[in-house]
Length: 406
Ligand SMILES: Nc1ncnc2c1ncn2[C@@H]1O[C@H](COP(=O)(O)OP(=O)(O)O)[C@@H](O)[C@H]1O
Ligand SMILES: [Mg+2]
Image 1 (tube, rainbow, N blue to C red):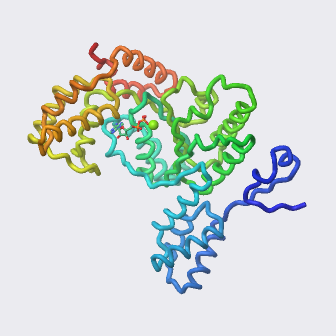
Image 2 (cartoon, rainbow, N blue to C red):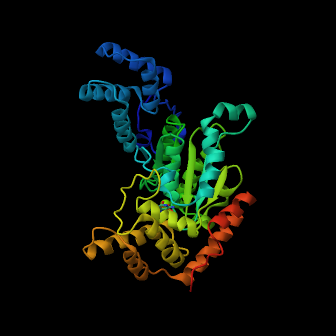
């Protein structure tokens, strides 16, 4: 008996699937897409250059021929041409239907991240520059980077950094939505994961972002049947992570590195494990500058200031920076937001030092708790990072001696 289906997991239960031979057909090959694009262009009498064809072939990776055809026709009838931008939008809608992947254009760059210069430099040297010159890297036997783990306390900009990295390397940003993998139908999650991996590989090279990757593989997970399914999905993911021919660059983040299964942190799974500790003094000023729209090449609109920029920066450096030791980037953003709100509230048209003064006075964090948290993440950084100079530079930049005032 032969069955042709796009949803094998809905038709056959797990046991029957084990008995059957399941052949998975790739959505489409480059050549097939190229031929179809040229055929459709001829049919519609659209003049299309060679470079445009290859651009379209790349933009439509991961689609099957039927989807490719309907997307091309749709953009042609709405825009009278094959618009790559429109194709990207339509494609991301289609991919979203898989339920597990989301494709977005990156929204941030390194300029939107205040501080973390050591991390930016490290990633630029070992990831961005290598990806920019893959042939040169190959000649020297330098492996292409394929996996990064960003870890540190919440709100230090790990998710933001992953997003910015995709735009710095100029690759699509695919979000693997971990919470959607675990289906309520037993046995389905494995299939979903398998499809997601296949689709992500088809769209690669791409940055595959796995936010809060610890959700996958936690230590000491329950051994019941739901636990067993979780283990299965986890081992599929691990297998992908360790596969030598993987093209997707996986960037995972976690706030709880101590919960990660050891299999994740073993050497070889991720090329680099990068700590995101609390920002040091210079970095804190930088984060505030970003959120005031004062950083260079920043996309944020410039906040109107009640005093000259130099004077405000001086005030922030002398007063706000010392008062915000061990605040996270997200908390510093909140300090800036509160200052803006204070200015609004007093009827002013511009933000001044007094607004920051009030903001800092109203914003409290639990400093004793925070001291323990800092120690904890420092321990994790020492445990997971195998690059001593990098670790030293991070500790210096993050002002490890710059402890919160009790
Ligand atoms: N270094 C930073 N520079 C600028 N903004 C930051 C920074 N860190 C955090 N933020 C702000 O806080 C928000 C939340 O940070 P996020 O990336 O989600 O942190 P994490 O993933 O580490 O928990 C960001 O979207 C950004 O607005
Ligand atoms: Mg995050």
